[in-house]
Length: 76
Image (cartoon, rainbow, N blue to C red; front, side, top):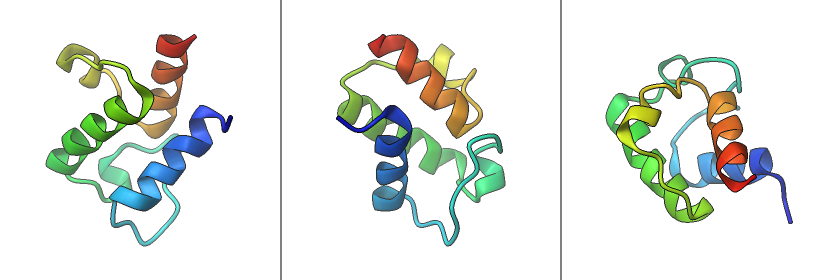
């Protein structure tokens, strides 16, 4: 089974119209993702990974790396 990071990168490629590989350490806005797109992407991630990410947790997740760590902790 692919790791969390590779699964997340596949979702990024499929659902976010980025013209570059996003950094795991940069913020979503740094990658060119609007706040509305970030929220919609979080819903996609929830479905794909079968986890719930409550709004208070979403506010704490500012990078793809933090999202990977959050998902790993939920699926742990």
